[in-house]
Image 1 (tube, helix red, strand yellow):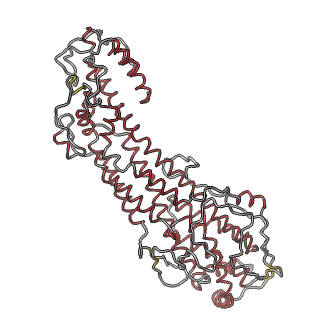
Image 2 (cartoon, one colour; image 1 turned 30 degrees about the vertical axis):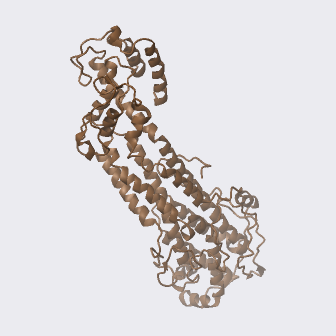
Image 3 (tube, helix red, strand yellow; image 1 turned 90 degrees about the horizontal axis):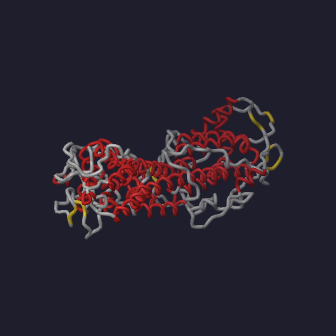
Length: 572
């Protein structure tokens, strides 16, 4: 039975009790106690006292006065008290859990959309500008963006490796269609030699390094951000299903159901009494407070820093422009590259070939590329900022959890007679302790011993993800572009500022300075007026830039959801 149903039922039964007497023993009857016990615990009426009687066998709800409880009732009440507290915990965390889980799912969906859109832009670049190599390039383009998605969503793939693979596979196409057109070697060995030569002769200059740098600066923070959100859900799930100690269970029973044994079915615990019991039960959970606060602060810092070349939206949607720059540079250096390839791989067997045309279904392009426009402010960064603003309201969630539970539902209102653990009184006179394990040494209601290994494990995970979040927050001179075996010079230090060398604007590729809107409309034919186009012949025909249909990534990629989050579209 859920919390709201239970509370509504209680209200009805308690109103009935108000018609009669407050204390069942006053009328020498346990009728109201029986009714509530049967309804709440679905217990049989058999064996329940009709009138108060001595209860020498009771373990917790002991009293000098006659009681309406038996030992079996007390045991059932103890189970109910634990369930009530668990339901109260889940109700208290439900809004926070929903906020994180929905945004984690929506963020993943948004990233998938970005990846598909970036793949579409790149495919159209080849179809419209480098038409005769489009079919051969399609597999490499799809593989590249599949790897991007796998990395973002937690797979063990290396960005440096898949960037290098893409440019390795691109060079033979550029060489055969632009640098040495109309001829090709029939052997796979020669094409493989050209592919292997790419890292030594650097046909694309430093562009592969720039792509690696941009991918490193944008993909890793986004991957870490998404992983951190899923850890937040795990933390809440853990505390929602807390295992209460024996001392805590006895304290909850005494606070919530022992009044029933005296016929006080309307009584609620005094605020101070409630705080002592609940703070004792949640002492280990309260230890999460500083780590949860640091976790949310680190999320906010990383989110604030993800802009410019650290913004995945900017990087992915401008990738096709860097690809175009790479092809242009290789074409301009064609003579030199041809000489280098001949030295490394020998002269090709010059056999005229007919390149397969770019003959995709045009209807797919139109369906895939006409993306409906949304509000201009709906960038990924803005939606992430809105989420962080909402999350900021929950910074003290664990530090004030016990206080909220007592104030919202468990404890009696101020000035109302309340249950103090022994009887109904005007106030609770014992000392009220604070939150956390250390403060419980003087708790008169619940004795707290040792540590909770489950909570300690969650704290360790929070500490780890905080280090990751802080380590992924972009700072000047923090990121070094990986060189590895990629062709193109020495390691390059990159500052957090967006400059021409980082690919934020001002390059010959026409790369935009602003962050592109994720839902910007993409026309049926990409506007390439700002892109360098190469009018090179292939088989006697100029490269076709008319833009016959291209395959799109609308249906090409699906990625598994990280963690146990539901996919709820339309939130980001």
